[in-house]
Length: 194
Image: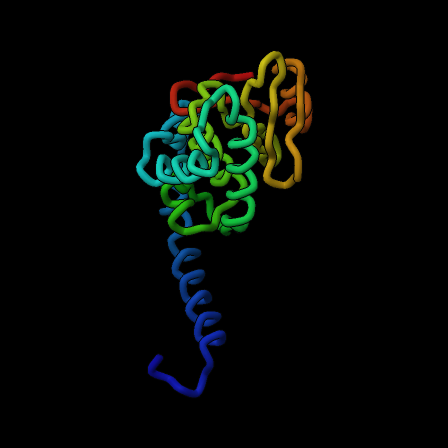
């Protein structure tokens, strides 16, 4: 630091203020170039990304011999708790999409970024039914769901435990806020309107 009269904390505060000024100045341009449409959502889930597969491998290493049928439920909980602990939530003043590897690298993201990362990791752990569920109304609600036998489990990053449902309709009713909300379910392969 070239100015010894301010401490590191004050310098960081001023630097963040400068970044915010730049971001807000180019907000419209950034949001225009960051625009994603519903059919584009699957591009965000990337279980084959090197950073995602490395995280999935670390999770698998926590088991003596990872077997999907025997260990996936524990691995899913581990992944959820890891992301919740290691990736603090942040809300930016602009609409910006992080890819899973960026969320891992930056170790910060909003609930949508964290949900996309969790879905990517669950898929990398072998779960073909992992999906992000997104409800759009006056805001957005987001969760990650997957099938576990005859039930559906859903994780939200603003809650401690997963919710359990007997059907997609039950899950949709849970996440949908308002009668006119649009609810989508997507992973790296598809996006469907619930």
